[in-house]
Amino acid sequence: GEDVEQSLFLSVREGDSSVINCTYTDSSSTYLYWYKQEPGAGLQLLTYIFSNMDMKQDQRLTVLLNKKDKHLSLRIADTQTGDSAIYFCAEKRSGTASKLTFGTGTRLQVTL
Amino acid sequence: NAGVMQNPRHLVRRRGQEARLRCSPMKGHSHVYWYRQLPEEGLKFMVYLQKENIIDESGMPKERFSAEFPKEGPSILRIQQVVRGDSAAYFCASSDTGMTGGPGANVLTFGAGSRLTVL
Image (spheres, rainbow over the protein chains, first blue to last red):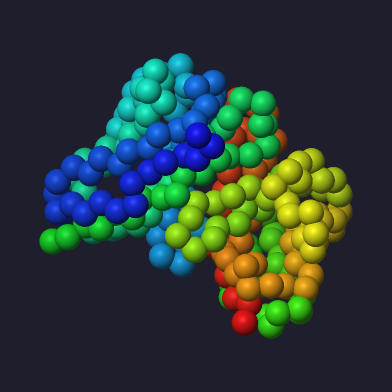
């Protein structure tokens, strides 16, 4: 399909791990990204991964990439209330040098 | 070093009026991108500009929408004769190089957005 798909909502308890999933569309996408959007704010780049990698870790964040299934996930360890936000995955498709294609976003709610 | 500055943050227009949204990129950035976010949706690419040039406008509606990035001053996204369906958040992003380079060249810095409401 044409859309980058994400589940709409995820609720986790503070201190637990969060896993946000994304299915992208183009098997030849070169880069895949995770952005965070807090209420009323713009998008903040969290991390990105090259398509020839299958994992990237950056402090509490772990990105896993399954190219065969076109599946991307973001794991947040020790989730904090400050992690509550909307998380967008995005792909840079081959042949589209100028743009990113975004998913619909997953709203992460962290409860005490 | 201020980030990407957008104004106004909120804009209310009646149907048929014009909306002008402004974006000042980060200092040193000469590439500007506009994205639109409809309620409950992800961001959709609209247009990519460099100074005085439109590089890719494949996401722009064919009518009523235009964008510019003059040699001096901010980038402007202009919507003429607005309709209710134009109500959305419009985000501007900038980068120091274009999106064709390696990983460093693909980092976009986003502004906080301009939220347009059409009555």
